[in-house]
Image (cartoon, rainbow, N blue to C red; front, side, top):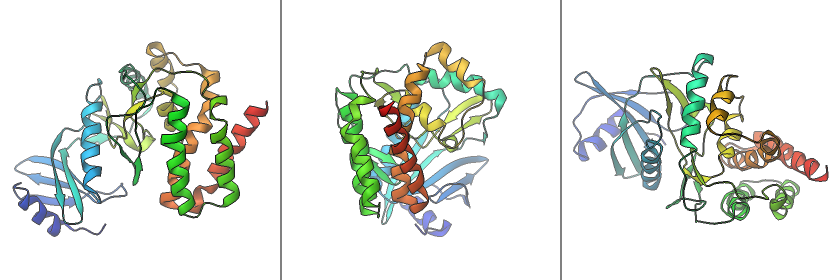
Length: 288
C-alpha cells in the first residue's frame, strides 16, 4: 500500500479525529505512523482490508484478558482502499534476558484462558493471509482443515512445486499420527514470532494477534521460529503451564509448517526449503 501522511490526515479528518503530526514508523510490512498532538501520541496502522482492522481490534481485546500489556484500540475506520486502526502508543523496547521470566509467566497466564472448542467466533488474519476459525472438537481435524489445507491452496496458487505440495498432502493425510490427543483449547496469540512481543516499561507486551482457541504449543513453536526465548523463559512458563518436552519436539515441525506455507505465499521461494525441511522431519519421526 502506498499511503502518505497527507492522505491519512484526510482519512482521519473524515473519521472525525483531530489533526496532529504524523510521523512514519518503520519496522512492519504495512504502513504505520505515530500521531502526535498536545503531548499525546497514538499508533496508526493502515491495512488493505477493513476486515483486517476489525479482526485485529477483536484480537487485541481478547489478549487484554491476560496479565499482559496490549495497546488499547482507540478507533478503527474504513478508507477508500482499506482501513486504519488508531491504537494507544506504547513505548516499547526489545525483550532481553532479564525480562524472560516475566514474559514466561504472562504467556502461561494467557494459555490458561480456555474456550469451549478449537477455533474462534470469527475468521481473522495471519499476516496478509486469511486465517479460518470454524469451530471444531477434534484438534487434528481443525489443524488439517482450518490451518494446513487453506495455506496449501494459497501456496499452490503462488507457485509451490507439485512435489513439495505432495509432501504436505502426505502429512495432512496422516495428521492424527502427530495430533493423537485432545489438548485443552486455550487462547493463543497465533502469530507469536519474536517481532510481535516486546516490553512496555517493565511489563511484557503483545501485539499483531491472530488469536483463536487451540493448542498452547502453537505459540511456543512459533516463538522458536526465528531463534527462541532466553533461558529464564522456560522455568517461568512451565511452573504455571507444564510442557511435555517430547510431545513438543514431535509437533513443532507440524506447527511450523503452517507458518512456512504462509511465508511462502507472501514472500516467495526463499521459504521453500523450510517447508521441505518440516515435511522431511515429520516423515522421519513417523518412521522412527
